[in-house]
Image 1 (cartoon, one colour):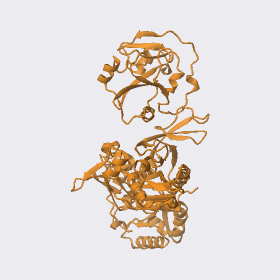
Image 2 (image 1 turned 120 degrees about the horizontal axis):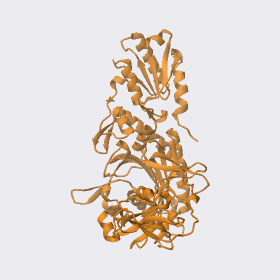
Image 3 (image 1 turned 60 degrees about the vertical axis):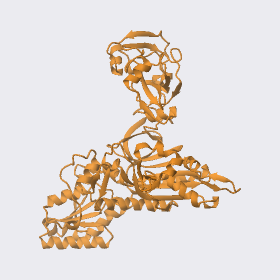
Image 4 (image 1 turned 45 degrees about the vertical axis):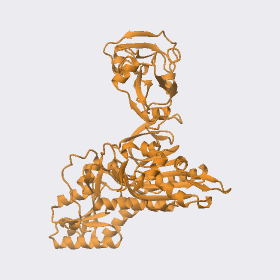
Length: 574
């Protein structure tokens, strides 16, 4: 490809709308352009990357026994109403009506559609197991689309669905998909971790996320330094630490005035006690009912865990007036003693002795509070978020925390959709049985953005070779110099013959401009043809991820490029 013919409108300044690095760099490097909030056009370089990611995914899905289909984006409301998700999905679903006033949705996902499709044509156990997948645009009306391709309203996704006779069959395909996804992300040459996760609106009873590690990632994951345990913070189990297991005797409950002491830090300073000796009370509204959660003062409530404990559909923090009406005091003065709400205690509270908390009266707190003597919670559960340094729930190791970007997720759905949609097959005895299902998704466009978040420097993108838009860029310093152009075109054609994807920068620009564009775009190898090196019958070769150049004999350029590119082209397959 000649650079002069490439549609690649680069920008020198960072667009004001771009909040994260991938958004900034993909805009600056001429990969994407915004059409509307959360909706983007993919320019030629981006689409080359997208197609390479898709091809890797296709190859591995086909290898795992998947069959590719393409289902409608516009889905009838009836199937969503039958599954119960027409209401549950809420405002994130794009809804529309046809000219006959029939309701439809733009597919945010395809569980309902694939289930009805299979139910219509798969009638017997002899047709099972079945694994179908598609690569297609999805639509979700995010309340605040942001971070470019990381949280958009239109995005490209690979979604796969398995149909089995029983849980044993589902288990086999689930772990086959686990291995398949591991191969995919290895081939993409991305650093990632597989973590236990929450199933969210998709549902199901087991799920794992494939998280691309990046300091700027919006997800937090914890992992053990001594075993294979890893989970995102929404799912991570918390183990009660031995360090907070106080065995002291219970002291008499007492009430003390604490004027103006509203926060945990205020209370710690005022009473001169360690933060581990404090408990905070949070009030939430769950499906219309007020409930309280109590946990150690320095802990954060994990709303995902809390929602699962409650078994509710909607959960939100209560407002000041709601709290005052129900509890007789405002935020900062609440506590479980005498509270006329259901109290859910974090498991750490069981071991806490003689702690301090609000007295449900403004500017007053209790000291020497003990569970069992002074109050009984409605339930005790793990409802806090894991933090760096926590004990591993599986071994004696400690948890570390890193950030990342969820790029893929696999789910065991069981019969959640087949039961509600009455999707059945005939078993060996001729009896109707519901399909046992799994689903498996990879965000294609999101993975492209995640790769940029992970692999970049101050000069631009550093694409992994397997998904780079081009492998090599050939840069004559001066296109008006016949010797440089002749040498450059010779290299360009030789590399093309060898199957290397190459850009030839034939623009009448200063060398510095060409170098900056090559770095910004992130081409893995740059070959510079300049007057000094050419006098020695050599060219300069630079790997994008290294600082130094190397001089290569003109006749050895093709061999040297293959030495660099070919071993990296297929990623790392374990």
